[in-house]
Amino acid sequence: MNYKDKEFDEAFKLRGGICSLDHLEINSYRDYGKNHSDFLRPRYPDAPEVNYSLINSDFLNAAAAAYNGNYFIGVNLGTCALLSDLFLKILACPDTFPHIGNPSLESVEKKSISASLVNGFIYYDPLNGTSSTKPNDSFRARYAAELVHHALDFLIFHEYGHIFRGHLGYLSSLSDTNANFNFDLFHTGVSDSALNSRTLEMDADSFAANNSYLKFVSIRYFNGQIPDGLDFVYKDLNTYFGGWSFAVYSLFKLFNMTKFDELTAKRSNYPPPDVRSRMIFGNIASILNRDSVENGNEIVSTMVESVKLVDEAFGKITYAPANNVWFSNYEQVTPYIAEIIDNWVNLHDLLLPFSYGDLPPKQGFV
Ligand SMILES: [Zn+2]
Image (cartoon, rainbow, N blue to C red; front, side, top):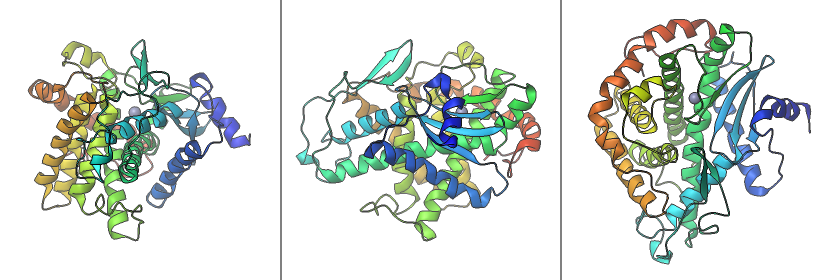
C-alpha cells in the first residue's frame, strides 16, 4: 500500500477502510472516479488535492472527509455493486426501455435486486435476489453501465461539492475535530443545525447538477469523447437528462421513500429522498432557464416522466418501496423546500471564506 492509500485507509477506517481488491470491474469503478478531479480542476485551480478511492464496505454510501488537514472522497464498493446490479436487472426486463437494443432477447422471468437491509441501511447482498441476472442483449448491458456512470457522476460531484464549496472547511472551523459528510440519508449530526445541514446538502446537490450539465456540454460540444455506441444518449440535453434523471432518481429510491412527515423531515439533516430529487430537478430547471435553453420545459417534463418510469421499473425487480410518493407528497413539501432555499442567504456568507470558487447567488439559487 502506498502512502496515499494508507492515508485514505486511515481517514475511512471506521467505515471499512480502503478497498484494495484488484479486479477488472472494481478497478474500472476506482478509475472512473478519478476522472472527476481532472474535469473540475481547470475551473477550481486553487482547490485542494482530493484523495479519491473506494471504501471496503457493502453498504450504499459515499463520503467526503477532512482528516488531518487533507481531503478525501470515498465511494463504498457496495454502492457500485448495488447500482450495477440494479441497472443490469432493470435492463434485463424486456418491457423496460423497450427502445434500447433488442428487448425481445430478454427473459420474462422475475428478477430481484441483490440487496438486504440492516436497521434501515441497505447493502449489497449477492446471496439475496437473483444473483447473476444481466441483459442477454449486450447493447442493453452497455446502457445499464452508462446509467451506473450517471448515478456515480452525481454522487462523486456531490462529494466534491462538499469540499470545493467550502462545506468541510466551514465545519472544521466550528470545531477542531476532523469533519465529514455521509451521502446516505440516515446518519445525523454533521452541522450546527439541521436546517443548515439540509441547505449544505442542497448546495452539494446543486454542485452535482451543475457539473453533470457541464459534463454533457463538454462531451457534446468541446472535444469530449462520446462513449462507444451511446450517441443517442448525448444527442441533446433532453436525451441526456432523460437517462440521467432515471439514474439519479433510482439512486434516491434505493434509500426508500415514504409519506412526507413534516416533524421528522424538519429534524433531519437531509431532505427526504423524494423531496431531494425534486429539488435537484428544480435546480436543473433553473440552470436551463439561466442559460436560456429553448426546450427547457420539455426537458423538465422528461425528468418528471423518468420518475414514473423508475417506479414502474422498480416494481419489476421486486425491490419496490412505495410508489407515487414523489407525486402524492408534492403539494405538502413545497413550503419545506422554500425554507431550505431561503436559508441559503445565511449559508452563503458562512461558506464564502472557505469556498474555492464562486458560490450560487444569494437570491435566485442555481
Ligand atoms: Zn452530502
